[in-house]
Length: 328
Ligand code: ADP
Ligand code: MG
Image (cartoon, rainbow, N blue to C red; front, side, top):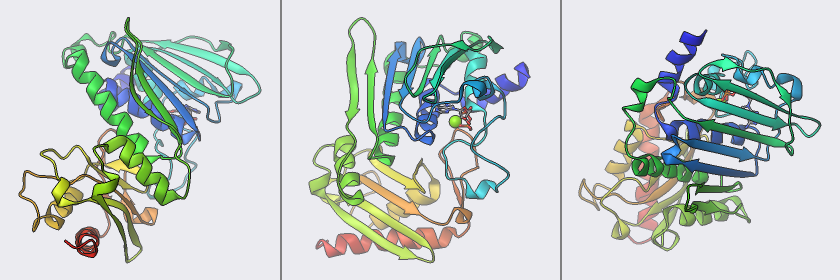
């Protein structure tokens, strides 16, 4: 059991940013409207994620740290998963390589449970409003070999910041704060819940995350083909950048980094931009769950499409049409 958890940890928990990703996704799965993230020492010393979601019923808090105990799947096919999590691996994995404290309340009673290097303590009564706080300290203290692979605090903080921004873009209705709680506290990112119709909320959040006048330099994208729908905003070639970090694609609401998609994006802009220039974009691809497999790798943002050719064609033609409509 302990060994299995550490093996899983090697897959799920590569670095502090992967812990932040798992904890924020859990908060989103719990329906949180506000998520507060605090880190210290690049996330190695401390990661604390607090949400106002559904919380965990008192009697089930130990289950949250048990391997393969997920509350999110009940015999349905892996293809039809709509929540972020579904393996029940993240919390036990993190608890096997760090000191973890989980405090939660479903609105009736609050409980707390701790794990350190895989050893679980008995749950005990606690004080917490409805929602959950997960505190992770001394990441990888139990697996010193993994510590050596971490980069500088600065680089790990940067990676955390990027993950948080990418997730923030996926959920414009959710308020998210990320701060550093060292001797000199520092606010790294903040976004209030975006009001208004979905499209306006998405654009406002994209402006918040991508910045540099994205909203003014982007065109709306909207296209459909064979059950696939592509919406969002694509940056004008005139505002392109020397890096692809401002390219955000979401498949059924989850952030994705995918060869097929980046190839299609490059092809869409090929007439306007040299290879090394990248337009900023925030695109949402939605399709029936059975058309995409998100189950490729627990930590990687890859997906596999049932009809890759249709996806590629849709992305390319939607962007070219959107740019043409704007006079390009
Ligand atoms: P998964 O997300 O794949 O189910 P995790 O290990 O990430 O697995 O979480 C285990 C379980 O703990 C979840 O299925 C959920 O029931 C519970 N849980 C974890 N984090 C939260 C949270 N922030 N709010 C409510 N429940 C949570
Ligand atoms: Mg999870």
